[in-house]
Length: 290
Image (tube, rainbow, N blue to C red; front, side):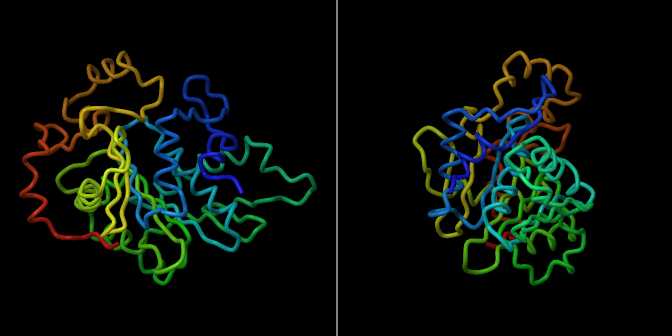
């Protein structure tokens, strides 16, 4: 069976944002190393955070891992979540649908379909399913998903968001896990802040790359730019692109949060330095469940 890295770079077709044509993702050595460290099933954490800046391929990566787990684990459920049901049906689910349509590898040689797409779910011939997570956490109680993915975690700030997040907790035992993705957030992004801090409190897994594993909490992740270096941006996100985005941004803090992965006080006020949020970390309500 192929590893996730092999699947991602050889079978998962994305739409190129420049040509608008389907193509395989660009996997640099650093990006490939990240995939190996975070998604190797022999030492994979129960919670994985992709703390990557905007235009780093977070949604594509989450779509790929969702499809990979559904294809390689029969009779399993994969949950796709966001801060609302409508958002869950958006970017990640749409990328999965696109990959299935564009890759001939997922086409059946006979007339029998290998998968069926019905509104908010995809059912595969191996009896696995990819399902958009409903807004109500109550309907998810007792789930037995092998994987759940949650995008834009910075925006999950309400009580329903918190309840929904806890329902994403992997079932005990077995190989179930969850993948969370977000660039840096705002002061009320308490769920993201909790996971972010747990990742940074962990052991560094690579001398160069900002990849960590917190053994006690069983949380791993990548925090790109935490030391001022960026390893995982897409190749076309160069200095010229960043300069244009900075000039067009209404607030510097908005640009810094999305593209530099820096936490901000609000979208329009000065940034919070990494040295100044210790009091926030000590006083906030602990929401993380691992």
